[in-house]
Length: 99
Image (cartoon, rainbow, N blue to C red):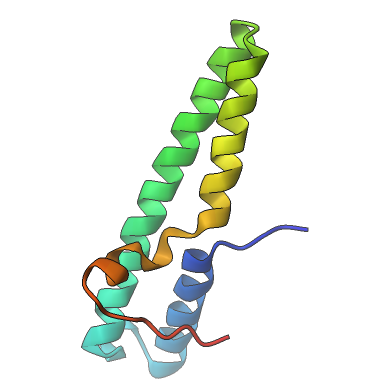
């Protein structure tokens, strides 16, 4: 089963809403800020995962299984944590996520 990161789920919700409303310019200012935040978190997540993937391959090439397993645990933890609220918690704002 493929897990969907909370940021990707929210991105999908915003895109679907924009599509049904007639475009991204029809979103509220709050939704546009939220969209921008989701895109920034997504970019960081992709960069972090790529870095861990490259380091894991390096550990494999060096035959360092302990390091490789540690990197795999970090990758798994990063994916499970869901950094979606990190920015909003710091600014004392809560974002509603509709399921």
